[in-house]
Amino acid sequence: MVRKVARRGEVPPFFVMEVMRAAAERLASGADVLHMEVGQPASSAPEGARRAAHAALESDRLGYTVALGIAPLREAIAEHYRDRYGFELDPARVVVTTGSSAGFVLSFLACFEAGDRVALAEPGYPCYRNILGALGIEAVGLPVGHEDRYQPGIAMLEALEKPVDGLILASPSNPTGTMVSPEELAALADCCRQRGIRLISDEIYHGITYGRPEATAIAFDDDAVVINSFSKYFSMTGWRIGWMVVPESLLRPVERLAQNLYISTPTLSQHAALAAFGCRAELDRHVATYAANRDLLLRELPRAGFDRLSQPDGGFYFYADVAHMSDDSDALCRSILAQTGVAITPGIDFDPVRGHRAVRFSYAGATADMAEAARRLVAWRDGGR
Image (cartoon, rainbow, N blue to C red):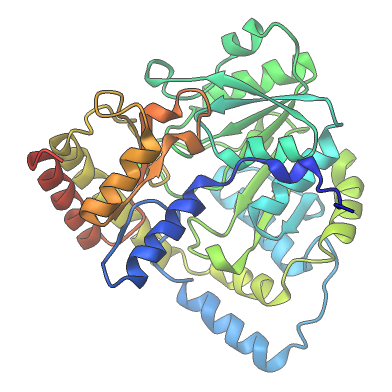
């Protein structure tokens, strides 16, 4: 008898991981790869975090912690909100998570029922849509483009034929790097409050911005859920540690879900993350590298034919319209990897409707690698592909 396989596992793949696999196969064949596909800092965890991890390995049993995270880390995260945003946050509202990915799962489970509708920008981070789908929640795409800086607005919510139960907002955004201003965030939060829409704010690229002010959603809506992570600004992707800020009404539901789904976040990573808050000077040097990479690629990518670019205010991505090159972004990315060794991500990962005409570049690597990738792409274009 054939055993049943649940349909929730039929979500689309995370295509950037497929590109990473193709890049790994190229490396295994002896050819080189310049990575512009994955949203991962090239730098390792900050030195203070690594030292704290070594110390914890020697001195701590590293058993389970409480599901919400160790108290010193929750207190440090609350202090971070006071220092960066001027917002007084009760540490009791902080939930330490196994990366932002667990934060999304916990927030979607705690906030929405199967059959609910949640709006999100397209293009946007694909795992929002895929996690929602696996949980039986309808993802409602809000098509955004260059004219609205790839960010959703109140008019888009008002134009929906059926109301939504939630809105996911990402600022800075993946894949475009664009941000909403504090004023726009306040207006969106007010709209959500009036309409009973749960606002979930993805703030994992905070700290990586280029001259535009950051704002946190909890400053404007006490019922908003904020998701953040140590992966991006803190360069700790593989440590799998992030956090949520939740309203008091969600604290126990999220805690019960976390207890059952994860027990607790890795203890070693919690000790390292606590120390990472003392490494600002080192981390800000990484942001200066991203800014230099951004400026370099703004000059060079148009020379390679990628002249329809998002204008990133933060994060480390460009989103490029390549309709003049191809209507099959997956095939285009495979061709570029095969011919140049430069790995980039097809837009179908971020927009299921229009993404076949777009690609994403990540510039989180070393500046020398970004310069070499740009040189190869220009040569590819000049060589007539």
